[in-house]
Structures are given as structure tokens and as C-alpha cells.
Length: 82
Image (cartoon, rainbow, N blue to C red; front, side, top):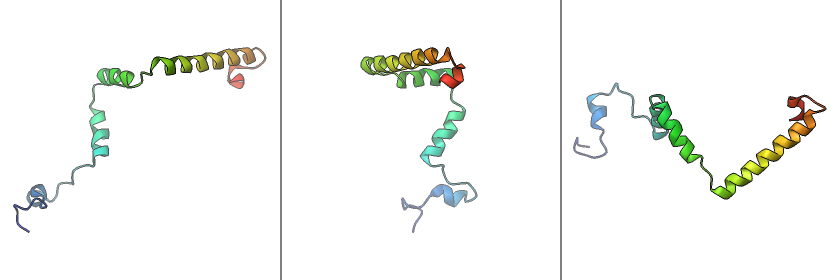
């Protein structure tokens, strides 16, 4: 196999003591360590947006759960009611 072959890693030949490149999933985790938190939270909030119908349904379920917990909490502690 010659050095011009695309299957030969030049980095491996020049620096065999270097670790192989990280798999994409590990590289993504590592990149997350240095990510700006504020901009990443904004991005996450955009990803978490639901269509209006799904958002309304989720809010209705949440409101119903809160009402039922509050009703049961009158005779129990909040944690026990939940």
C-alpha cells in the first residue's frame, strides 16, 4: 500500500502515538463542554416548541393534574397526593 492510497492514514504514519479521532457522538459530547450556555439554551427552547394543538393539549393535561393534586392535598400532604 502506498502513501498515496486513500486508505492509509497520513496522521497515523506521522504520529502513531496520537489517539484515533473520536467517533461523532463523542465529538458532539466534547463540543458541548465548551458551548456557550445562553445560546445553547435559546437553541434548545426553539427545539422544544410544540405546534399549537399539541401545546394546548399538554397544558390541559398539566392543568388537570394540578387541579386533582390540589383537591387531594386537602386531606393529604402534597407529595402523598401527587
